[in-house]
Every structure is written in structure tokens, then in C-alpha cells.
Image (cartoon, rainbow, N blue to C red; front, side):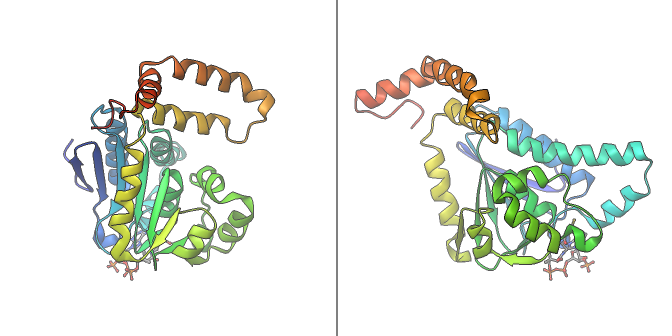
Length: 260
Ligand code: COA
């Protein structure tokens, strides 16, 4: 696919996807949503890719939905309006359900859907000074599509305050509430992301995909309703080729075959 709104770099097992519409701070319109969804979906299925890093070109990670595009959708028929909303929902879901871990490299600003994209990623690292905000209510909108991911990351207490005020907050606060895992000087951002990537590459590729699915499935459930599922997961995974190899490698005091 010819990409107009993204740049993709493949570096061994690491795919770096850059939102590339810096003139509007990487605000996403319909084309960017389509490109990003398809790119992340395809990378999630590519055997050679084991970690995906998502970043933004220019001064900001992502200014959320392109408000000119959002405004246009308001004039659509209800059916078309729903279709556009569904395509954006599919983008967040693609990140969340990717078989590969997705690391957000966040700088400048992550607002509205941009903050939602951060929430949908597995691990997020931000540069100090990055402005975050669930600004939708200040625009007369609601953070509907991103709300499951935001609640999952920051919980109801912080979400009630930040979603209802729409206030902007800084990277340190984003770390305190769990939206990002680290807030570091911008000069250290790439090194911090690379360290996360290095850690993720230690994991078995099937195990990591299974673990992502496991966390999604178990989140919010009572032990009684989920225990059978958890029993089946460990039983299946420890009998899988990768599980056998990982345990054998440990006992033989060598690296497993997925570590080059
Ligand atoms: N949709 C459409 N255009 C946007 C945009 C968005 N979400 N965010 C920024 N832009 C445009 C601006 O209108 C401006 O266009 P112009 O050059 O034609 O005037 C351009 O991007 C640069 O924005 P500017 O505000 O001058 O850049 P900045 O670096 O000073 O600030 C932000 C960057 C992201 C902090 C600021 O643009 C902002 O607050 N954007 C709104 C983000 C938001 O609330 N998004 C929620 C959407 S639901």
C-alpha cells in the first residue's frame, strides 16, 4: 500500500511506524486512520516483526482526530457517520489486539484521540513536557471510542476528573496515573524506548501474543468465571513448541531459540 500519512521503518524484528502529518501535528483523518489500521494489522501478522514502535514526526506525537474531518462527518448521513466512527474504533482495537506488543514513543502533545492511542498501546514512554489531555468535552464532544482503553489504563477516578474537565496535563502526571510508564527528558526518549524494545525481544513471540490476549480476557472478570480459561491457557502454552523450548533452554542454561 502506498502510504501518504505514515512512514514505516523495519529494523530486524522491530517495526517503527511514524505518524507523518506534522503540519497538523499528526491529527488523523480518514486516510490516516485507514493507513494506520491496515499497517498495524499487517505488521501484527508478519512473523519477522516482534515489536512495533509508534511515534510521531514533527513537534507532536498526535493532536487526535482531525477536527476538520470530524466536522465533515457531522454533515454525513447517520449511516456514513457511523461507518467513519467504526473505522476509527477499529484502529484502536487493532492496536489493542495486535499479536505484537506496541510501544508508544510520545513527545510534544498527545491530545484527544492521540491520548487514546497512547492508552491503546501496551507500553508508553513520554518525553517530559509532553502535553496530554482528553480535551473532547471542551470541543463539545466525548471521548467515546477511546474510553475503554483510557479506563483500562488510568481507572475511573482519574478518568472522571480528566475526561470531565478536559484539562491538559504533563508527562509526569500521565506517569502517575498510569497512562504512560515512564516520563524522561526528551534527549533520553529514544534510549528509553529502545530499552523497552530490548526487554520485549526477550519474550517468546507466541508467549507475548498469548499474554496480551490473556490480559484482555481476564481484565475485570471474577476469578470464578475466568479460572477455567486460565487453566486451559497455561496447559496449552506449556505444551506448545515455544513453551517447551523456553523451559528446556532455562534448564540447559542456554538462550532460547527466539533470542538471536
Ligand atoms: N485537528 C485539525 N487540525 C489541527 C489539530 C486537530 N486536532 N490540532 C492541530 N491542528 C492544526 C492547527 O489548526 C494548526 O493549523 P494551521 O497551521 O493551519 O493554523 C496546525 O495544526 C498547528 O497547530 P498549532 O496549534 O499552531 O501547533 P502547536 O505546536 O502550537 O500546538 C497542539 C500543538 C497539538 C498542542 C495544538 O494544536 C492543539 O491543542 N490542538 C488541538 C488538539 C485537540 O484538542 N484534539 C482533540 C481532538 S478530539
